[in-house]
Length: 112
Image (cartoon, rainbow, N blue to C red; front, side, top):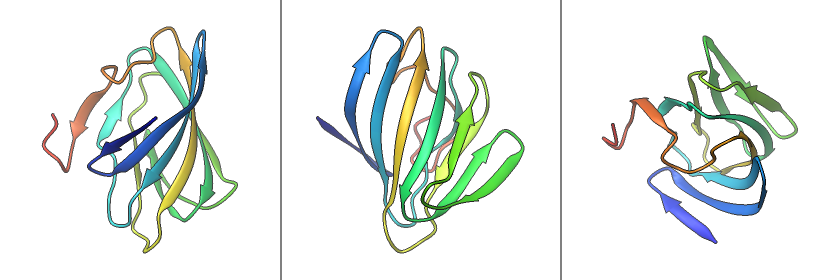
């Protein structure tokens, strides 16, 4: 199942008790909201494209084979300033893994 978002799309690849695996596609020029989660941690692995990842106070350039661990409660964002899609495998860990566990701080699409 693929769900469209203003920044691109995600597909759930696998899920089980306490984890969910997604394929994220961030379109050129788009980015996630600056956000954090109350009940889950995430691990991003970049598989194609290049981008910028905000994790806490750090902003890191990311490219294929880079990975970032985002602890529960940590501000984060992924953005794609490049001309090709940014493709990421995201593994979520936690007691609750639904989409409503997002606290948005800034959002290009007015979803606060």
